[in-house]
Image 1: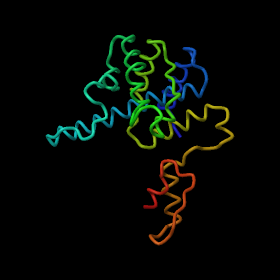
Image 2 (image 1 turned 180 degrees about the horizontal axis):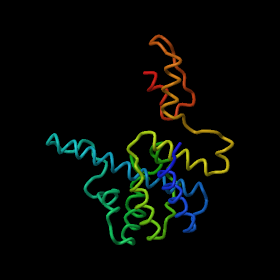
Image 3 (image 1 turned 90 degrees about the vertical axis):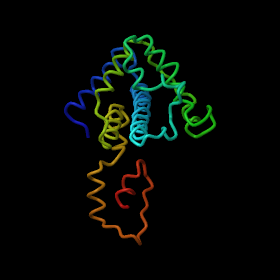
Image 4 (image 1 turned 30 degrees about the vertical axis):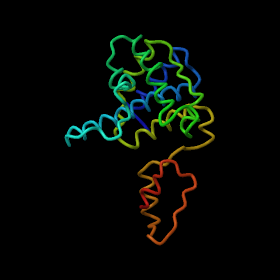
Length: 201
């Protein structure tokens, strides 16, 4: 569960969308998710580039080819012109993530992304949202799950559906209590991030 500053950052981000006319909770979560995904892709690419530089080798399997550098979070987050930022995100980065790994409809991912729509049309709103997301610390692996669970709790149905993920410290406790051995079979039918399976291993 997120508390304190992180919770207020998410609340502020949510309020920013609501104040700018995007009030459907599912739409808010979708738009934040797209931006977080774009940011995560760039974070992984930056790590690859850092490793390649350290080893004095080219980047292995780059996600962003030279002609797609404008689709990177690290590129458009620093743009002073909010109109240009909107163009880069809406017309370059978003279409890029929709077809990641193949053309529309070719893979399971692109089939699910086929009908995805980027709803942010206000340059000032996008600039504000990008700046707010940039300040959210996403290094801790639990933060992402906590963030989504908190956002989902804002949907009326979330209260009826219960929690969506098990916090890592609870997983660790359960595995320590069960003490599974190498000869036992583990079944996790609700496997999401495979937290239980990794902890058991």
